[in-house]
Image (cartoon, rainbow, N blue to C red; front, side, top):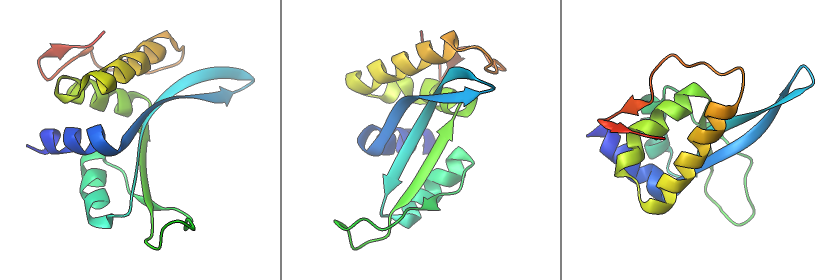
Length: 123
């Protein structure tokens, strides 16, 4: 049930990104899932599932409510992407596929697990 809840939240609110990082003058692609919301209780629940703590963001002039950010990257983000993939809409599935392809092509990543999660293979 928690996976379906998280998939719904990420479908509507998250960003699945391919970023860049530099390590010892080499540039690598990195993947991440980023979530920004004003609902701290929802962010705490998502954080427990992600194994991460939501962090406060600097106030934005357009909002009077405090903002919270939650991000995971690398292998942990890939594991979540593969887990929720079958539950996502077409646009999100396409973005997740792009992220996974970039992760597979990037040197220096950890491949502790296979590419099969939740009964579906993601390529």
